[in-house]
Length: 329
Ligand code: SAM
Ligand code: SF4
Image 1 (cartoon, rainbow, N blue to C red):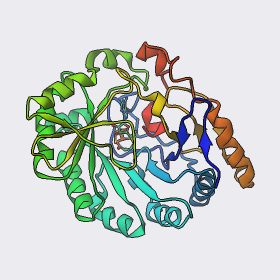
Image 2 (image 1 turned 90 degrees about the horizontal axis):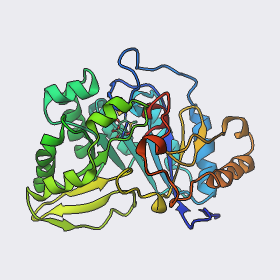
Image 3 (image 1 turned 135 degrees about the vertical axis):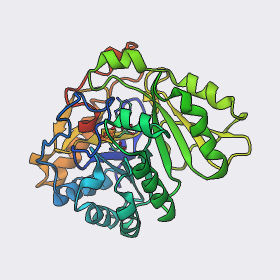
Image 4 (image 1 turned 90 degrees about the vertical axis):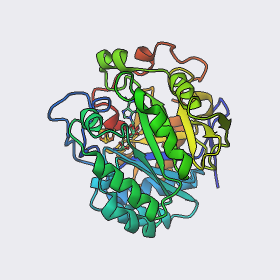
């Protein structure tokens, strides 16, 4: 089996595929504008196209697939997508990033189909704050999704919380305490100005070190190993805690030198880097696997030099007019 490595020695083993760019929430940091943001671009990759892409990726040595969106649970054929991916030789790990709202119905069928784990985005443990961030979502629906994931064995369940100054930074300790009793991973992520909303970014961006200090006030932090699937977070445990705390700092301390991933957008555009607009349209190539494989190699050349990224986040993030919802996080 081939392997994908770029000229900076980064070995690519992980592909994030956005399966949809619509969502049933409307998080202000993700969607560019307040109204009408439950975007319907449509024209998403179909099941067959997704499977062709994953087969080619597997030939290139990619073993881990993460499905994302938009909200991937809105795809009526998501269980079939997972089932088909899990049958592809070489794919050893399938995970999902979701807001969790539809997990009470879908967690078990997805687990049976071959899904290994979920990351659930949950930015507040307070109903009012959750509603404000998601522009109308209900916290209890997300909590029910979390419970369903846990019960379906989609573990370790990871909670992703975007750290937002003046909105949820007062809840960092509450999030950290969730890891005391359960083997849950809570990961704090820096807010990136991807949607081009520099006003909100300047107002609410908080470097991740703030969250580390707040967690350390709950109990001493003990360094922990990264989970086997790797990833960009630095992990700790609270002393005596069962779960883990992860800190993801794409801006204040970027992890580009360890980046092991490529991304495919919902319309089948292959992207080498979250901070770059360069993309290759895979759709016209899907008839010939060898062409798709070539595109993966070509994409690697677009992965930027990790030492030369712009230090200004507003420049580095090159605002995307569709926001993170179109790239998949
Ligand atoms: N709807 C799913 C969810 O929310 O988990 C999957 C798609 S969402 C785009 C994927 C991840 O991107 C989420 O964890 C979300 O918090 C994160 N995200 C979106 N916009 C972001 C931003 N501006 N900065 C940092 N993370 C962001
Ligand atoms: Fe939807 Fe996820 Fe973006 Fe929130 S972060 S709007 S749940 S895609």
